[in-house]
Image 1 (cartoon, rainbow, N blue to C red):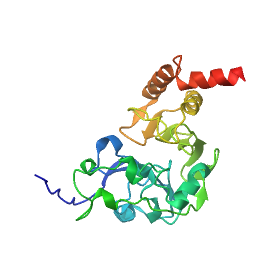
Image 2: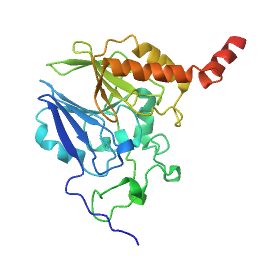
Image 3: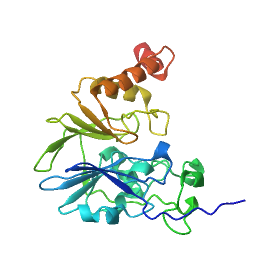
Length: 262
C-alpha cells in the first residue's frame, strides 16, 4: 500500500551557532546527503555558503536574518549544495564550475534523471503538496562573481580567504579565516565517507589537496555534511584517507607510475 507522505511545516531548520553564524539544514531530506548551509553574518555584508536542493525557498526562510548585502556562494556545483542558488541576486562560484551553473547542467550537478541520485524515499516529508522527484530541476544561474584561489572576502568584522581545493569536484572551494583558523570546507573534508569516485572527482588531485591541507593551521571545521569538528579529527580524517589511497595499485600510484615512465 502506498503511503501518502505529509507536507512539512518548514522544510528548513536553523541552528544558531553564535551571534554571527547559523547552520541551516533540510531536515526532512535524507541525512546521508543532507548538506550544511552556513550563514555568516558580517559587519558590512553576509555570506551564505551553499543553498541546498532548491525544493523550497531558502531566501524566504532566511529573510528575517538578512539585514545587509548577501553573497550566496556555491562551495561546488553538486545539487545538494547549489540547487537553491538561483534564488539569490549575488552569486559566487569557482570558474571551473561557473559554466555548469550558467547552463543548469544536471550532469555536472549529479542530478540528471538517469543518475537515480534523487529518490522519493530520500524525502521523509514533502516540501510542498504534490511534490515528486520527477519534478526536480537544477536551475541555471548566472554567477555575479567568480572566486579564485587567494581571493579575500572581507565582511568588515572578519575576512575569509578562498582556497581552491579540487578532488571531490574540479571547482571545490573552501573559505578560511586565518585569524580564527576556521575552515568552511564544503565537501572537501567532512567526518564521514569521502566521495572521490563521482563524475568530476579525481583521486590524485584529492591526495594533493589533503597534503596541502595538512599544513594549514585549522582549529575548527564547518563542513558541508554532518557535524562540526576540530583539528585532531581533521588530521585523522585526512591521514586515514591518504593511507587508504596511497596503497600500491591505487589510482594515484598508477598515475604516478605512468608519469614516471614517460
